Length: 283
Image 1 (tube, rainbow, N blue to C red):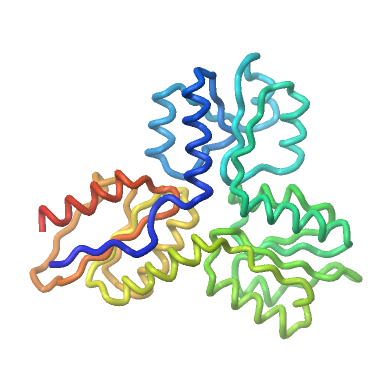
Image 2 (tube, rainbow, N blue to C red):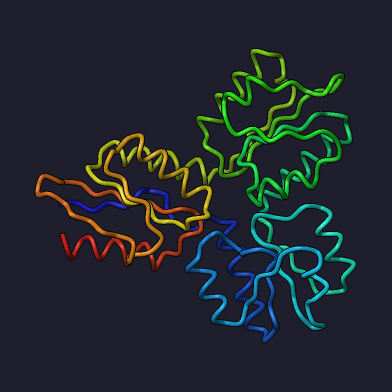
């Protein structure tokens, strides 16, 4: 039986940068707080907690941080109001927002000043999407499905600016773009799905189409990991979604020839290797 890892899997640039930022500050002996979980992976957060890093959220929490504390903005970014609140708090604040997310903030901020209705293709309630919303100055709508795209009507007299959550499903985004194009809402469409997301989704889909069994490793709150699971499940009926090796309960018939493994952008390499080695040794 072959065990194969997807060509692109695990930490992306933005996540690695954010985690490296936290460890760099820990190394300086500072008391560290992250505004929201630095990434959506429970194992990573647990490891950081053991090193004294605490997670805070909300304006009140910011002003409760003792003097001398350092607050790090998570990879998903924050709304402009929260960033301004951090600056007023007098705390040392370090921005670890993924640069690709920062780019979206600039796009929607400019679009709002131009009087456009901003549409975000993404998951309502996701911290990245909430952060993007917080940089919009005018009307803003979050769309997550084709049905919502069909029902969307922009504010009267407004042009439309369509962007995407960096980890949104590429095929879903293209469907929304086509719907908007047919309705004449395509004057300002920016595909802001990051390359790392597109690469992971494509390589996972390719592997799942060949595999008898697929294993997707990621945090339960990780949007990009969930999307990998949906994509793999569409190609391979026997797809498992796990956070750690403890979640993996496999019973593989002898007919299984290929087990594929992929992992979300916030999944550490040691966890991926642990799962790979376990499957290779035990089956």
